[in-house]
Length: 352
Image (tube, rainbow, N blue to C red; front, side, top):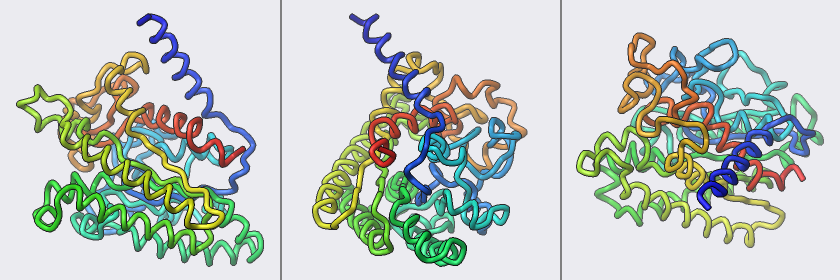
């Protein structure tokens, strides 16, 4: 029975990976909002320490280039873009190396260390979600000037809009800074964030977006950074944080059901990374991984960003054996598997 289960899981993994191949796209562009999970380098161009534009970040990216992606290579939205028949990478809006002709196919406004809550963005002086939306409005004007009003309007309505945000609101803000935890219980804070997410979707809809994927948050208690604090639990996942992630994701799902009924013509879906990442962490060998409790970079226990300096003697030689790249972010291989899962189970309907 166990053997059959392993074979089935292995075949599923192969299907996920095969799925990320170029197909004819019915989505003209992918537009991304969020945090470090989908930032392709916007933070390189603002005054913040939340950056990754140096080695060993990007060492497995094309040309071995550190772009500002918090990974050894590509991130999930890059793989999704390729799987939807578009470009193999989605550029950062603030990167002057790209212009509107590139952004017309895919663009990310995401900023590492941000959240739904403006107070989260304030912690490391990064781009808040409302500002990402302002950049998007500017992008629309540029797109119309580039394509013409009619074609740009079609692109805006037919594009796939993706968000990946929320983890920092809890780990960087609520459970670290004193402000929000004094104002709200965890459940109340979840409700506060869901309210922001709801308003954000409504604003996007008002600007012409119709195909929207709202991302959930991962089992954040299983990130190496959190596991290092769990000495009493033998450095296992911190279940308190995982429980909050599940509660928050369920509230997002309920909100999505409401908005699909409320907003005519919208197709709003929930992209949930929780269970696929949890599966990888719990059964790593089925996916070809060896290490789940530490990242590849430096000691892998607490480092990310500038702490993952190129001079670290501990950084692993083969990131494909690791679920996490640093103490907070997945490796390119993990991003690839998660992206393929989302395309197959959630996003395929947009390209049907």
